[in-house]
Length: 421
Ligand SMILES: *Cc1c(COP(=O)(O)O)cnc(C)c1O
Image 1 (tube, rainbow, N blue to C red):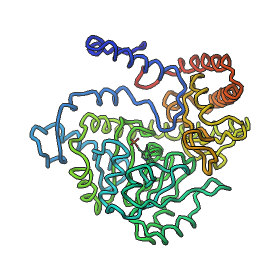
Image 2 (tube, protein in one colour):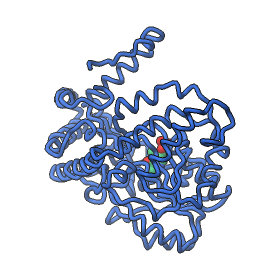
Image 3 (tube, helix red, strand yellow):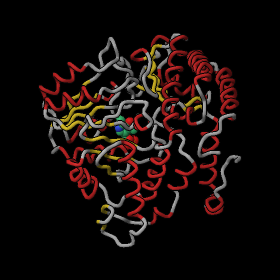
Image 4 (cartoon, helix red, strand yellow):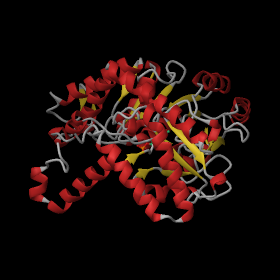
């Protein structure tokens, strides 16, 4: 298929918008997308999320709705729920949260009262806004206490986490985050949660696909609740799920609806069902392991080029680079790499002396390039482009960035993206 993809009705009704969609298709095809929270969904997932299921209101749950005409919608949601339960080995799954942030908000509604103490990893250490960080509603309406990683190792210090939990007695402890390059020890968090009487929530938004594919340990049965988005390594539509043991099923369902949301986005539920079906195939296990193998290979190549990686490398899909030794701020590097056709995001590193909107680091990941079929044999070229791009960012060499962009586009043309081919 050549780009832009055919969208005949859209083209006829709104050529201005159709042109923007076409330009985005071309951009996603031509560039090396290294943002670790992004991916390429399949054509099947795209089609499911663009169906007339979106015309239907269905507040409630399958068999218990507030609107009639649910003959098909109930089956769609039951299919998604059954597939989530089978894939992750959980007793209960709610597939209705609109996205990861509302899913986490539902967890607060289920297990805490405003003003209660909650605990999570600090945002600048790699946690998520919704884990009780100050600018988030979760940090304003609850009393967030935060743990981090050790400065010398870049790893979580479980003695510190335990001490904090026993002192502060949080209602909820969140583990998981957005910039954690290492395996999460769910069992260690579960011990601490049990000792301190907290509900443990494993927020696996980033690594859900790795867990489904057996490339990262599962939080089941350690965590009371598993929260995840569906659009990162899991390679589904933008959405989320909350999973738990049966004992918490009622509290979670009540919190999502009617506690927080109205009608579920049925077209998204359908696309989640498709993505879960894809993730249950043997080929997805290969995908998950290839994501990690690529990240490890890329980390080695970057280390060989003198890059400073937080925690010294990676166990998963993500690499956090501290560019301080390269004398290039993260934002300057990210913007230059973007001009070179390499899409990354600037990110704080633990104990960052710079400001959050102008930090020292860059965060990269391998889910998207692995979806296109790039393998470990390509990681030297990727590291080389990053190295040349960061150097060019420092010297302001726009010609070098343009040269990289052409080389990137040439390689990517040989690896068509799912959903775009
Ligand atoms: C992405 C992410 C979220 C939020 O997801 P949105 O869909 O962007 O609201 C929550 N927690 C973690 C750990 C994430 O990585």
